Image (cartoon, rainbow, N blue to C red; front, top):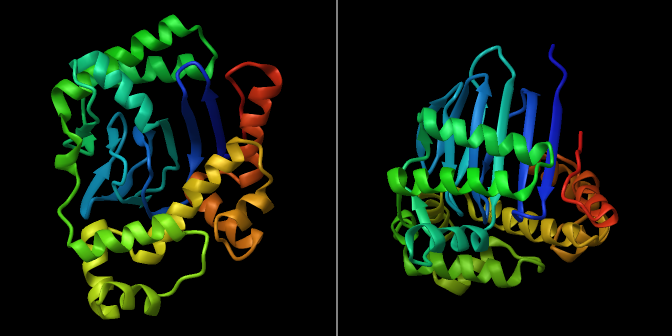
Length: 282
């Protein structure tokens, strides 16, 4: 069995995360991110569920995820997965979109899985430069070339990628965004929006691709990531974001991020101590 290695680098110059998972066999349950994701499959075959569609994604295929795109995957053959990825914050994407298109508007990727040899070339070069701590010039050049190609060939206004939702569902989402640190249950939420439990679960899952509880837990993990990046301890991050205990937080964080909260926090603490933009977590 191939040994699993997970490497994550935070690049201060580009303000984004790069990660490399080698020998991964674990499934990733359905979830979403607040940032953009561009990923490259280098080995293995995965059954991917994204925005309520099914894909088979394999070697040299690129994954494009908009903020909020629900997705999950499981291994589809005997080979462990090797996967490179970039997490790009909305603000960073907004700046690059302004430079590339002349309009400071968030782009939206119209396709989630693509085959594009030129994009693979730019992506692999950029990812390797970040992993090896290359200077800004080369990294920035490859990033502009990659994003220009993707926006031109697969881009559309971000708003078109957001599915239409019932007013009540958006109200539920807003409530969870504003009260994620608090205890909540279906009775409370259904009472507030005037929907039965069955109606809420059916409508919410169809609209968002995840259940309300999974949506809430994902919000909590995303907020916890921000706290960990600032140096907050895993225990404090757990309690500050509504998790019942550190064990529950650690298990959930590891399932979706691929690292423990402590290992994730250490990446950013090492960067601050060294004054650089590179660190590895395994």
